[in-house]
Image (cartoon, rainbow, N blue to C red; front, side, top):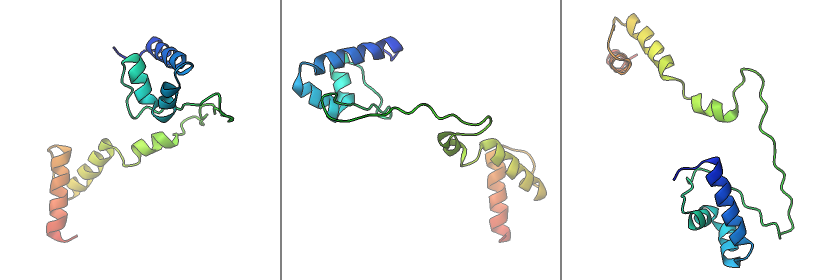
Length: 125
């Protein structure tokens, strides 16, 4: 079974209903919500998916922030991190440009890059 909006809602309903009457299960929800969801619904939640659990019987306040609004064309931090290392097309353009200056033409981007690095090491540049 895959995760859909309906399966998420059903899992949340089941977990909430059981946590309302089973104190041990409620503690599991607070300590390891992924295990609690799997135990109650049979579905495994990916470890990378973060789920926050708030015990409504505790004295606490939670504020849910709205999504970040960004200016047109501006990248979010998470988007910036994903491209911070550059892109393959940028690297290909760079090595093809350097390669043509060294007389290296043709081949895959990796091949050109290897030849450029080899030439630079050999020349001691």
